[in-house]
Image 1 (spheres, rainbow, N blue to C red):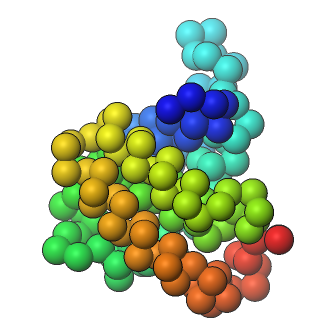
Image 2: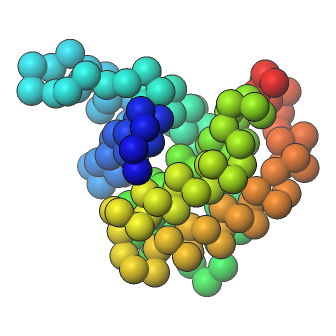
Length: 150
């Protein structure tokens, strides 16, 4: 993982993961850290991702629950949950040309590879791959106010 976007995704997963563990709001957690003397600057794309996942979390969790096989959201590793939420947000809510589906899936798999268990990359790839396959249908089904501007 190189590139500024990859690093921004990693930071976003860090915030999503910590907020999930603490059972707190990810945006509030991130906002408390921005500008703190002991915190590195937070990239704009990290802010976009954390806010986007937070804003669409209910729908993201519904879709993940419908498409994960043999798991429940509450049973999976917290880091996998954070990676899947971020990957699905990029798949469905980022403007079409901004993050190609293959990039969203590949980046999530790389995050799972570097942050989670040996089985996580295959699991994340399977779930997001299925969702990427029906991406256009899922995007059309989003309420108008949630539809990304392409």
